[in-house]
Image (cartoon, rainbow, N blue to C red):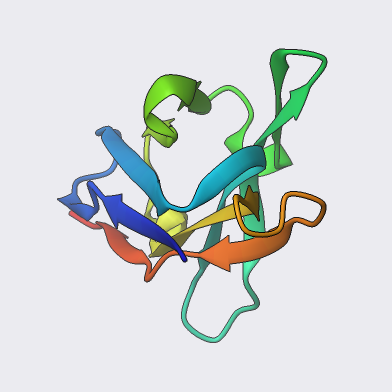
Length: 125
């Protein structure tokens, strides 16, 4: 019913930037939250940044390692979320996953979690 498709990953050198995008599609009634997580080899998946819909506004929160370097933004008319990543470091290397909490038109009273397939980000010289 709902699909999340990420794009924008790749190989960059330390200090460079990347912009990830995630488009939600399907039978969407309302999106309450969109977020980015990442998972490095041998590590648990961790939250990078989230954008919460509250009172008609989008509220962003960041993991400590992302503050000052990453920026999450929403394009609500297209149900898209972006993650601008600047000053990338080798330790940012991971698979980045889009996550969203969405209510569908079939069940407007409940919201479920959806995940994208992930996009690889590699930071290496």
